[in-house]
Image: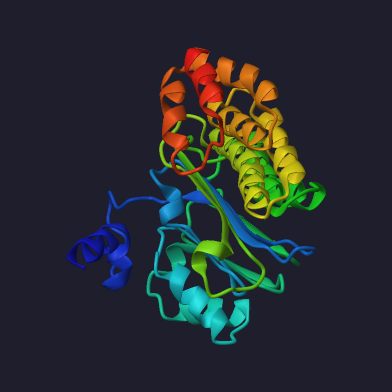
Length: 326
């Protein structure tokens, strides 16, 4: 508990104590988006900043409730408190007004809140460092401060509304649009992307659909985009595993194949695709895939015998010997 209090005071202590921001206080300035998918109901938030691990401070979301982005001289408590107010039945505007009214550092804050129905509200304090501003609409809110240009948030809104596809990809397009306008005047360091389901199952691990962070990177948005592509491929891998459990071999192979096409150089995907082929009686089809994997990393070949005793890999003794000799 003491470590958390120390972290909180180090980041936002001046506001917590009702003081003015002293020189040298961390400047968690950034651009972000909170949004809801009008079709699926998924709720999300995305952010980029010239600040380490920005995702751990700025963006918050809860399935069936909404999302919050809290930034500038960030008051981290706005995240969980904002979600709690939405959960208690407050509108985004009401929740925002309550948070701001109780905060003596309000002039330095920037915060956006969206509920599960796509209603949004945002606030940019009059002492946020220029260029700073926000733009809200049905299904989204974009906000930015300490930007190179005052065109950032408008570009983000256009990119989000004009991009088709899943919510995560649309929010990523908004981040890319911000970068195209010059982004954070200080440069780039970290980025994050968070998506939760439309309705709560009561199981946080199931409700959190995407949770990707780039903590320290020269091109965080580009790296975040790469990670999202990997995430999508592994969604197909996971779907393939479920299909195997359900005995739907053809669907499993289709899912593994799709993942493999998305990430053709990924040895993990190749290996388990080959395992699935063996388990459905297509041993010969699996051999060239295994061979390609083993040539890249022989540890995968050492793994083969360990999969047999528990039935993960179903082979005859003769087939096992062939795999050992590849």
